Length: 173
Image 1 (cartoon, rainbow, N blue to C red):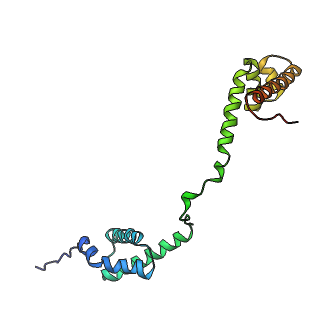
Image 2 (cartoon, rainbow, N blue to C red):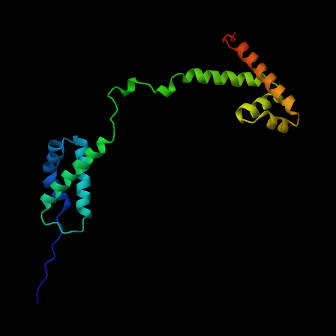
Image 3 (tube, helix red, strand yellow):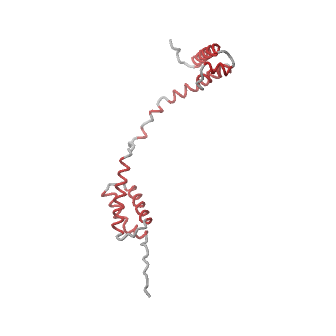
């Protein structure tokens, strides 16, 4: 009776220890991948090695070739991204410039709107915040178009007066 010899796959832990320095040298010295990223690439290479179902005849050559391919892929993806400057913490977001001023104006407008009569507040809300026309405002308030236009005008005039009285902002001439 012929005995069949089952070959056991090599212990990945042993392979890792055996080829770690070589693979790190390939990634970090040959391809100039940073050490931390080289470690990550090496783990990906070993994961791919464990997942491969094809028979690997020369493990060392397969691992070196896989590390070369992983390093090339690393630099292709890095080329698509732009790194942030070292002093990024010293810079502020241009979108936030004037944010405090806009916030202060918003709070002041909110305060000014509180001083208005409820009907004026509702009229301005419908027209400016919901974007409704004077005709829509008239329909909503159950009044004439002409009166709705006049109400929008007078309420806006009143909220401007309140705004200028509670702030130090000068009225435009």
